Amino acid sequence: MDKARKGASVAVQNLDLPVFTIPAIPEMVNPRAQGAKSYLRGVRKVSTLLPEVSLPQEKVIEIPLMDDLESNTSDDEHGKAHRGRSRDQKLQHASLQRLKGTRSAKEFWDLIRDWTDAKKQASCVSAEQLAVVFETRLNPPKTMPVEFDNKIHELRSILLSHDEQRIALRKSSSQRHLQRRTLHGRSGKLGKDIRRVYLL
Image 1 (cartoon, rainbow, N blue to C red):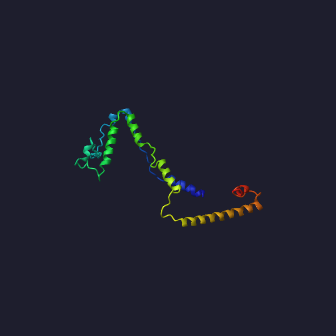
Image 2 (cartoon, rainbow, N blue to C red):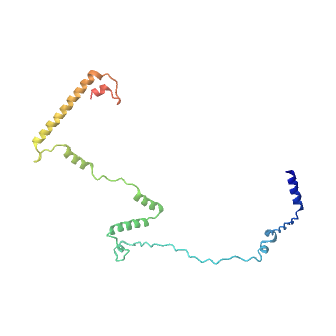
Image 3 (cartoon, rainbow, N blue to C red):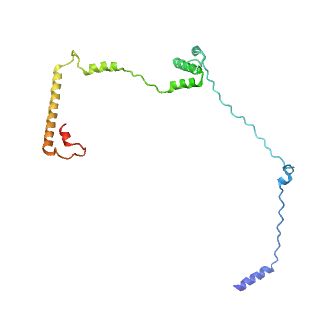
């Protein structure tokens, strides 16, 4: 292995290889030292011909204002009310005149607040009207109408009394059951005392 390395080094030494020289780097020109004008002298200016683009004009919508209420009824197409809404246009015009008639910013915003703030709505039905209506509903009439049937009324009264009697019997049986067995027991899941339930 050593003999091979020695032979390779001798062969490399005997080769006639050309010698390369690195050229010197030119000295950079400092524009601050020579001045900007002398440095840029002779340099061609770069310019391009760009087409002039006109910006789109803003759309201005003219809103016709009525100077008086009579212009609302004119034959002009702007003065005609759409589908008979002349009343709404008159109210809007009156509100506009009130706004234009304010003499200060305070009056202006007081008017705006008067329009936008929540207002207490007046009751559509008075207490006297309710009293008259419920008095006739709750109290029996002095004279029964012709279509009133006494027999049907008596039958319904009997049925209602029978239901009340059945409820009373079930209540009494439940009370007897509580009195005999669980009157002194503990309260259940609902937390109700048994004695309180017994007195119902």
